[in-house]
Length: 89
Image 1 (spheres, rainbow, N blue to C red):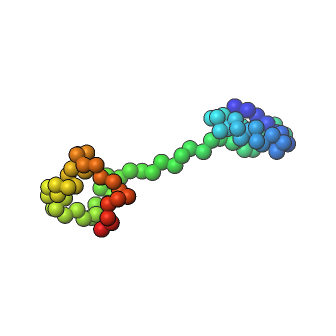
Image 2 (cartoon, rainbow, N blue to C red):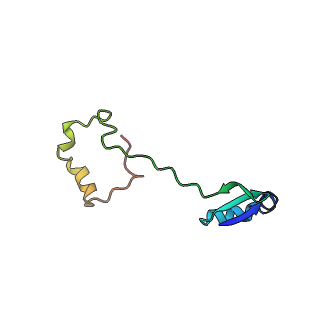
Image 3 (cartoon, rainbow, N blue to C red):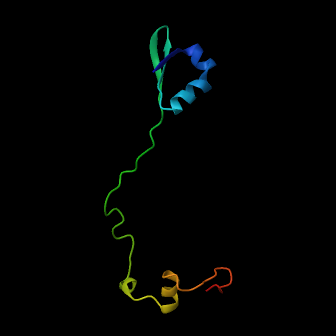
């Protein structure tokens, strides 16, 4: 942990921020009294809730139908399909 005065913090802010980016901590003091602390920002973690999208997505039973033969060949790598030469639907 690095301790600096307000004047030092203003003068050397870039260097202090580099230290914080590396995981360090900087305490800024005025007349030997700590008034602020520079620390790295922790990435915001989104709480994952199982079933959050329940009822928002509807997948029909056709999802279990067999793929057409031409599409199945593509998935299995048995066809040499070229995106740019295939007509668009």
